[in-house]
Length: 253
Ligand SMILES: O=C(O)CCC(=O)C(=O)O
Ligand SMILES: [Fe+2]
Image (cartoon, rainbow, N blue to C red):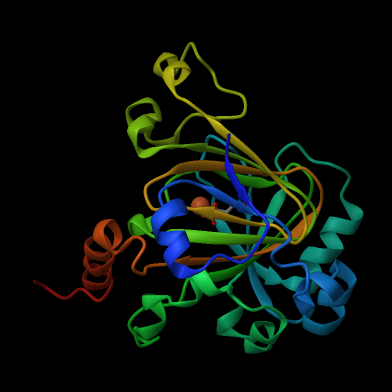
């Protein structure tokens, strides 16, 4: 069973009781402007000309990214019937639309994000909007550089499956479709202990550093996500992250 909570937590409560496992924060984003007014039509009308990235969803293969406009992508959502491997849209909105920041507020326990202190020329922030149809989602993975993340559903509904860091030996580097595993190809996967989470609009899901997860959108939907490093995960995340910074800039130690 996943930990669930309906109220704002203090930093202290979070660090002591909740930081080490996935957490469903129910209804915590209900009063965000985004949750109250966003729809596909609204985003298309306001931000239809913005450039976004799209990729084909395939739970067992890494797919290429393409660039399009948000407006064109939302048109695609309207006209396409349900495809087996639909396109999923990722919008790194701080590149071209900082206005989005006005429509949500990161909650107290995730507010302090040390990635925010890195000059943007060195490294991008890790804040995205996801837009996708029913059946879209993200294959089994670990978030990069052992960062943690929060993800708020604005519209739609998501199903998550989590596996603790102890289960890494059964994960086959994320090649398994955890919702529909091929146990002949990946027999050890049957030993893993899944935690399933259903997320509704206004709910935030917290993914701790080092936890495997896969996500599927059960309905067409919009979500906001941020990866972070702070007190809660500094011990495991800070070194992989700094290493990544160095590699990205081709510096040497
Ligand atoms: O598709 C999603 O909502 C999950 C996203 C996720 O896990 C990620 O971006 O790391
Ligand atoms: Fe993730």
